Picture 1: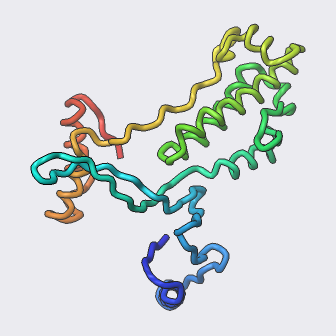
Picture 2 (picture 1 turned 180 degrees about the vertical axis):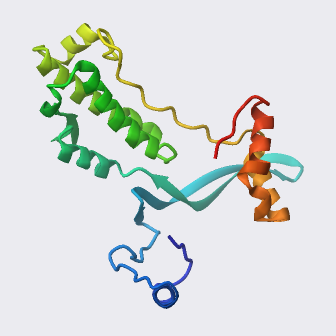
Picture 3 (picture 1 turned 90 degrees about the horizontal axis):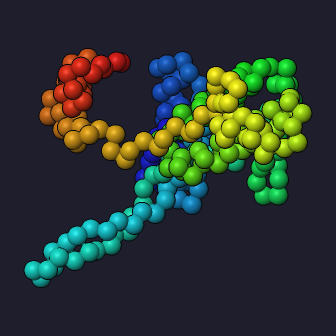
Length: 243
């Protein structure tokens, strides 16, 4: 993916140069459907299952004016990476986990899972939910999307168990197996993975790595040398660092 600040004609010329380089030097041909040119302003770009948009950002900064501190609001734009909720839910509905309802979706029992044991049914749903949410863990809308997805998939799982055990509804399923469906088995319906903290590197580690790159080059950023030692010093000598 290449981001450009230019006119449409210039973007077309750059794409043609890239296509020529890829064909002459690498023996590759750009697929026309997979290499489109899109406008970021007022639109979105889909890349590897993510939705990338250019959204307005409002920041408040504390500045000193005439000897007094005042708050100043600045407006700008920034890139936002989010999970395509409609696309994900539509795919789950195609498989059979969900069904359209009004303007949204509802959980639908996947009857092919009924012959499985209770733990196997719950494990199947856990694997689907965990796979989707782990992939979109660092997206902008994860905090709002993850509980909604878990609610829909849990409703589908409860309807499967209600059919399997001849219960009259989801309320009876929760009364029989508990709110997390673990009673009477070894596996319960898992919660959504927690959203990551805004600062993934404590004590300004991201800034440290960027400064190290700017001053000493990329060789100083080898994970097995500098990064792992800095992370171990931040989290304790006994912690492990894997690459």
